[in-house]
Image (cartoon, rainbow, N blue to C red; front, side):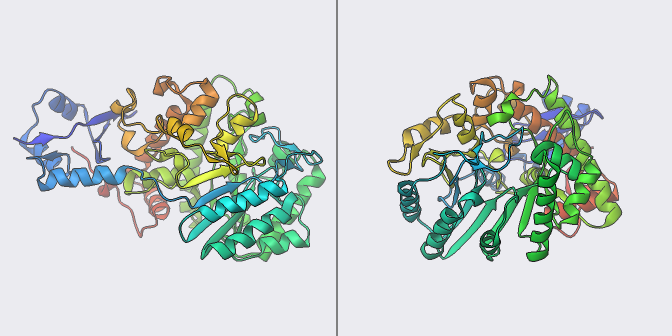
Length: 470
């Protein structure tokens, strides 16, 4: 007799149902199939469909059983060797954004930069990293305020690692010739914030017409100096005063940036003080869904394809094995494995958000420092909650094979990690995201198919590529 792998299901607004197994195999059907499955009265045609889709097997270790085990294993995120380090050489900044999630220090403040001893210890730590490649992301504050520290790290890594890449997260407010020269290197990339048109950017970030003009002048100069792909940007969206999305996309396209990572105001740092209202999550999910539909229509109309970065990551996570480049959809989401953060005082943090949360004194999520090393006992404690395999809510969710966890966000918002999963921001956001992913991949219109193909990096997409049990 055929053995079925357990199926979870989720009902959509049109009354159709998505079914998924533990390995991420999925298909759409209806309530009549659910009844036959629940009451164990599947037809021979049902059983053939499930067998062809990899949802059943005849005996342990047969081809179907082994195939399922292989697909399940490929869904799991394996800890990789450390190759990505976020460095915060200074916490000082020359802007005062109202929703700053870092809790930056004023530009003239003292005691918020690496000391000579800390720099020496950071380089000693980098020396211990095994492997042939490294990616360094300079965060802040505004890291270009300490260009000397950035140069010291880059010079060291270029000698130590055959393959080294650097990203400078900068507000582009103050760039002298030395900064331009540093950013101009082929192995160095720019990441900045662009919240939309000039009015939106000024309201949320610069708060001053002259500073706004400086930012856009420097951004335009960077675009003129450097090849496409060297500059990336991301907007922060206030759900109470969202930008005009058409104007936002116009701004990004104008500067040759075709990937937009739409972010809500983070519940970290100074930004925690902002009241986003009781329905912030619902408003965010609605705005994000509208943005995806706008992108699809715009892409089809112009023939110039842009993406929302995180939506594309979730789409790939559903359809590809090993597509877990973003930590939020890794499972398990192991801390201090392939990436780590070094703060302005030399302390290690498992994530940038953990650094931000610790900064305001709510909890100490540091995991050692560059002098004494990584505290593996604290890492192990964090890792004990960094997977969703046995969560009492997640085990019933059709999206569990594609989703991850965010221990730090749960601590930030609720002060605990054992809240029922469906009551968390993380769950509410990702349920809506995956709802939208499956909505889009099952659409049959030409515009949706074209964008899905572009976001997946394939020649074409057809809704017939995803299964339906009619």
